[in-house]
Image (cartoon, rainbow, N blue to C red; front, top):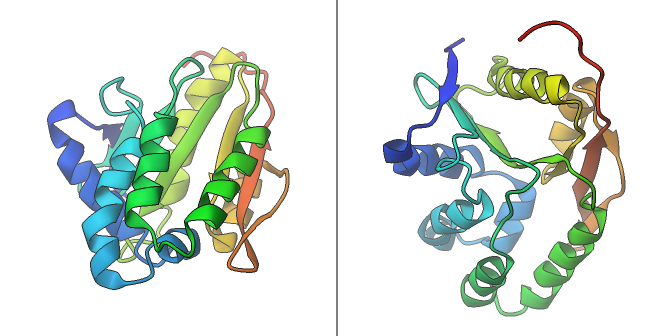
Length: 198
């Protein structure tokens, strides 16, 4: 497995390309952009907004070959909600916009009000899935967060990823439907006590 390292600010485009490849079969994302051409045209700019300032703030990680990536937001970092709403309204199918925005509003209710880390996006190129890349990216940052004694929140956009997150210590909070299917799962990982040095 490649080494986990920070994404440099001048590598943001490559990081977004990695995320675009990783989410090509994600059920939530493809519900938002079901047509291949629309997905390829819109997802990268959406991911750029959804990941907030993770790359700029040095809380985005990847592997040496950009086989996978993870964007983390620290307790005081936030996404630009107005830009997210604008992206959904202007790029998603018009008959799905209200449903998608409604799901985003529901997710906001689960986001902890107290200090916590947030993982808006983690993904692995399908060519490398099943090789431990996702777990490696997850564990790398969770160890650092455990030393801070803070909880972690995420939203699984694919049911197949839930077991991985559970193995990492996350618990399911609820399931939110899109297109009549419960495909978005808000999850929380309680703060861990960690006494060993980093």
